[in-house]
Image 1 (cartoon, rainbow, N blue to C red):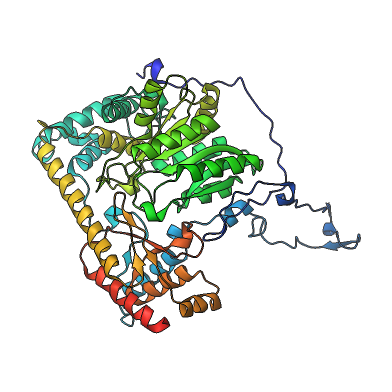
Image 2 (tube, rainbow, N blue to C red):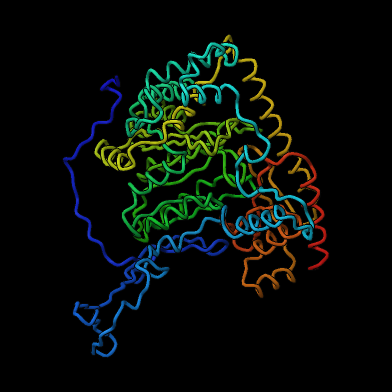
Length: 556
């Protein structure tokens, strides 16, 4: 039975009344345009109203016309659908998610042509370098993880007479423990997640950071993305709410803020310093936003960074925490790539915060932090299993009650994803029967990722008009590309961003799908694209090099 101490108390003592009004227009920050914070104003609120009265009669429905004040009977409503593009949620219409946008859709169309036997295309396969989806490439699942998942999904295997010949002993033992704590994977868990699994996560955090962690601060989620949605839903009240997002950023954040009708406050990362942060500049963004009336609630930090592959130093993290302490905003630390470190060292926000609280008593006591992790990245790469968690520290208890209510609406995260999260934070250890193979598999995945990262990086260094920062972490490179004026003019003629035009041409000529930098945000006057380095081999790299050479030749 779950222990009471591991459960979040659910208070109903506070309530509020919300009034549904017409949807205000969310302030929009075009990629590669002006990134000055803009405070919401009454002029940004768009009121949509209509006065339509209908009465039923034996003749049909009579609708009062707004335009001339007359009424005329009609036999049927003029609108055939209740939900249309104009009557649906307009915030959703405005949201943009470039990772699975136009290029990804076109890539699927081309793949379908190839599958149907089309031999007219100048390539034989599609390389989806647009999304960090390791097992869609050649990354294999970790054997121990899949063995335990198989056993908990089909517990009868534990009693099979050949079980000890098929499965590792520690996999059998782990499955029995998990089943004793969970019951059936087909049953709902606590909304916050299985208590035993939250304890495993807290232990992992303690061992990683050397500081205490409390299971009650851990919320399991269907991947880090759903945790982000829950957090932003909780903190965003409308266009007056400001949330700082890095530029470039992972478009999950801008899209979610658009749907939440909140105001994104972009802060530029500095490409010349390896996509680092400039504390003085960020402080000025904070100051200007507050001065313009924005209610600054949070700052998003992605470390290691998607899309740039950069990693923050301890000093950079310290400076960000200091800004939060001085200006009272929540830090949302997206740390899902913490195992993907190829150069340098990963520093968690939780560890640095606790060290500052120890060294400078009082100053950092009220800092609020949400730290995210996921089974989709690292050496695990189980994107489709949807496992992840968020640890919340320094958050007001009444707010946590409301967050618990929100996650309770969805009942619970997928229990199989919770199990995989437990395996990620509590993998085989030296002495376990499965450990030699586990270590061999993890080391091979890490080695392949690092080699592919630098293979692509070195190729970019040799390409004319292309520059790229050295890969430090994550699964991506974000090179700068120089696009000739003639190509920019052609892009304008097609009503496309220049880097999107470049990426579309790359896809049509090579079958390699990447994402234009304009989908992530970029400094005005610069062009980039994001590519993963998950694909095996060098052939697709040669395709990119050849395309770029011909593109420059054509448009120079």
